[in-house]
Image (cartoon, rainbow, N blue to C red; front, side, top):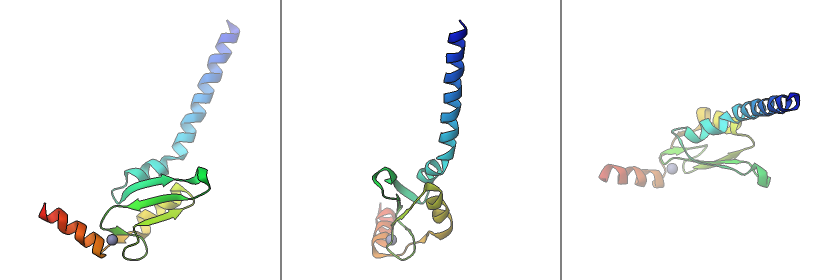
Length: 102
Ligand SMILES: [Zn+2]
């Protein structure tokens, strides 16, 4: 009986730890849900960065720069919020035109 209870307590404790870990990766969730973001590829397990593909009509540093990478989702999110600007490259203009026509 006493043993069972301690196992349960351990389970609860490990579950709480999981929740805390999930809260830490919230930046990734927020990033994926961001209206300017199309795709997020978390390639950190492969030794790469977190790669963000922006939605049509948005760019990073220069016109036509629709993909960028940072070391962490937090950095990506900060970059999306602070550094992403409307894109007027040919591709985005064409995409916009297509939307208008449809
Ligand atoms: Zn563009």
